[in-house]
Image (cartoon, rainbow, N blue to C red; front, side):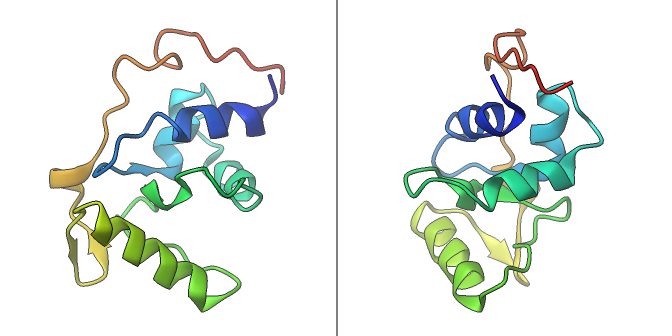
Length: 113
């Protein structure tokens, strides 16, 4: 499985109303220094992927090439009941821990090395 496919698989497991950070996704996939690679992978995400549930380390919506992407992310998060304070997700209330995922049990084997 490619790194990109592993990112997509893990992001699909983030439940409604929860968020994960780029760095958290990278760490769960065994690449703790690959947060930017996660962001690049999500830049080519299929339309049905809940990419909006991934935020930066401070809970912020990361800038995109088009402002409409940032607005879309904020709207989708709000629709799922994710609280934003001063433009940032309240991570203490909405962070997904990723426990019990295939990645934490070694089930998302990747061949990107």
